[in-house]
Amino acid sequence: MKIKTFRGLITDGGIDTVVLHTNTGSTGYRIVKFQIMTNAISTASVEHTMQIFKVPQTTATEVIDFSDNTLLAAAVTMSRIDAFNAPLTQEVIFDNEIFNQDIYITHKDNQSSQSCNYYIELEQMSLALDENTVATLKDMRNQEPSNV
Image (cartoon, rainbow, N blue to C red; front, side, top):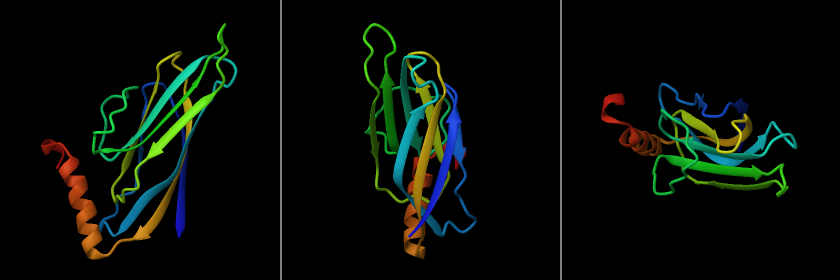
């Protein structure tokens, strides 16, 4: 099993693209780890929401919709530095789906507009022609008609 890792820092409202597509589509990926960490530890109250999508996004939002079939993963971390002093909490959920195109990471801080770090591990695999076709068709079906 080959693991590829990606990490970065996204500003509030930011969107990062992880370039994974190939000319043949014969390389597939599956998320095996997704972690986020504020870069403002103990200096600001934060409510970070990060999501990973299979299709390009135009805006980052704190709204998570598991009925969205383009959503691959979601992570939320919260910490309060005020009279409540709530401890750092984190929730991460990701799909076991195989994809062979680029992915898009969005970030929204609903509390203080801080940036947030992410770390992603993807299992890389070779796809047989039939698996390649299925993954590519799924990705194409999720695209807006003007993007296909």
